[in-house]
Amino acid sequence: MDRYQRVEKPREETPIDENEIRITSQGRMRSYITYAMSLLQEKGSDEIVFKAMGRAINKTVTIVELIKRRIVGLHQITSIGSIDITDTWEPLEEGLVT
Image (cartoon, rainbow, N blue to C red):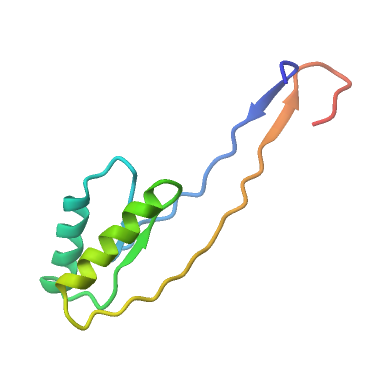
């Protein structure tokens, strides 16, 4: 791979909706729970969308279960998706294939 360099593709920046919470592995669970509770109770949101990737998925499941225990009658709809990521490598020397 020393004859190739990886080509960075521009990422599509999708705006974050008001009712969307993106969970990271670095964030504090208490902050996510507090924000979600304020969305449901104070702002009157009908739904909250939690998004996570990788190791943050376990934390997301825990957060959602804690919120469901705090609010009686709350229902959960789970949707799991995936994104295919393809890296492109360009050759540094002539005659090599991309």
